[in-house]
Image (cartoon, rainbow, N blue to C red):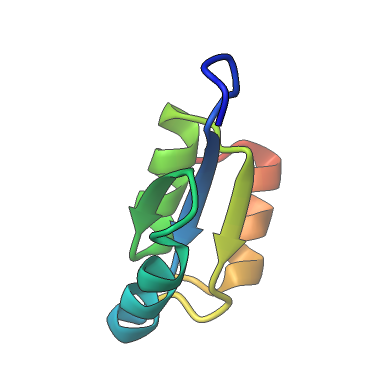
Length: 78
């Protein structure tokens, strides 16, 4: 990566800890600024605090499903 290249910021919002660990291992060799949340509420806070370039979203979060998360995000809710 060149000095002026920006590291991509990725928000990983996954409720299943095993799946989260697997995805983190798979992405470890990539040049990414990886941010992680394990619930919809913390995911919304994470995105509000620091907007990512890409969001990988689990549709089966513990506190809301992925579609509800998307609707909160789209509406600007926290």
